Amino acid sequence: MEISTSQPPTDTPAQTVSSSSSTKTYQGISKEIIHELTTEINNMIGFAVYNGIIINTQINQLIQDSTVDDLINAHNLLCKNVAPATPKSIEYTKKMHQEGSGKSVLNKIPVSRNLIIVALLFLTIFIATVMSPEVNNDSLDKGILGASGLPLLLNLGFLSSVAGLGVIFFLLKDVSNSIKNGTLIPEETISYISQILLGIIAGLLMSEILALYLKDPEDINLFNKSILALIGGFSSDAIFGILQGIITRIKNIFVPSPGQKTSVQ
Image (tube, rainbow, N blue to C red; front, side, top):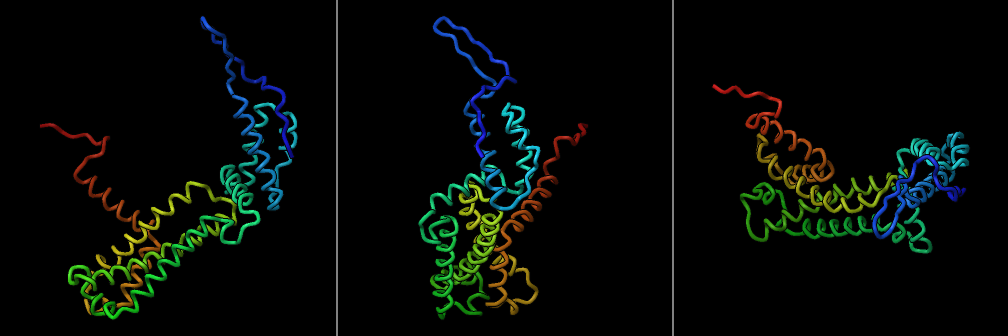
C-alpha cells in the first residue's frame, strides 16, 4: 500500500525570508520528512500484514486524507500496533532480508554470524586450556595472586573463555528473540562488542575476587570457579548494576546531594 504525498501540507504556514540576494520559502515540515513518514507507515503496514498483527481500521481513513496531522496520527497508531517493534527496527530487518537474499543461512544475518564465530573462538580457547595439565584444581585454588607465568596465563584464559561463552549464550538468545520480534536495530550490533568485554571482566571478577571471600578455601575448585565465571559472563548487566549501586551509595556518604543543605557554623 503506497501513500500519496503529491499535495503539499496545508496545516503548516510557510515563512518567507527576504534578503538582498534572494527570497527563500521554508516549510515547517520538509518534503523529506513527509516522505520518510509515509515510508515508515508503509513499512509498518507491511510488517503487520506479514506477521498477522491486527491493524487499527482507523488508519485507512487517515492515510487516504494524507494531511500532515493525519499521517502523524496514523504513524502513532501503527507504532502501537507493531510494538515492541519500531520503525527503525522494521526498516533494519527489511534491509537485512533484502541484502541477504540468495545468500547462505549464516550470511543472511551478519550479527548472528559474527556471534557464532566469536562463540567458536571461545570454545576453542576453552578446549585448548582445559586440556593443559597446568589448568587444574590446585592451580585455580592459588588464584591470580598465588600463580605466575604460563600457569597463570592458561588459568585466566580458561576462566575468560568460560565467561565469554556465558555472555555469548546470553547474546545469541537475545539476538534470536530480537529477530523473531522484529526489534533488532543497528545500535545493538555495535554494543555487542562492549557487552562481550563486560561479560569477560564480570566473569573474572566473580571467579577470582568473589572467590577470595569464601569461608573455606578448599571449596574453591575447578567446578566452582567455572560456575562463577559462567554466571558472571551471563549476568554482566546485573553485576554492573550492583557495582554501580554500591558506588552510588558510597558517593552519597562523602558527597552530599544537590538538594541537601549544609549548615555553616
